[in-house]
Length: 161
Image 1 (tube, rainbow, N blue to C red):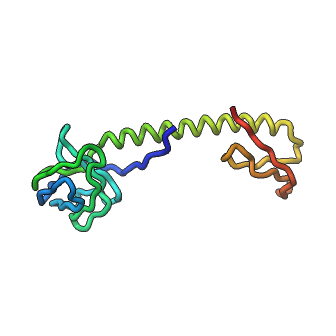
Image 2 (cartoon, one colour):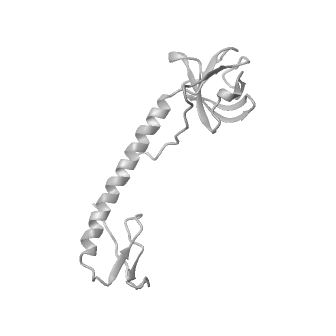
């Protein structure tokens, strides 16, 4: 199972700005005409160019239109001319992050449901004067407390398939 992926905030209507300088494949400081069209919450993604030729970059800082970036975040770092469009567009990375995170949460929910069912089986066998408190990690319960909230010397271990 893949671990959760970072998700980046979108920008309403994907407003475009343009590069104000030519950039090479290794440039990590690029300048844009309108810094207000760069996402305010960083890091974030932007695409340089349009269509199948675009390059997705990761913007890590914005100093009034001087962007510090990681090039070729998706795709290949390319040379770009001044005047090239740059915008916060929806990318394949965004789609993949949604998918991975939903699948991860679904798996976690199914495991939680399975552990809850096991706990219900065990708690039905306990005396009414005991309450089970547990945290769901490492497939173990942390402690058992009596009805006064005092811990007692017991430990219940939950095993899953």
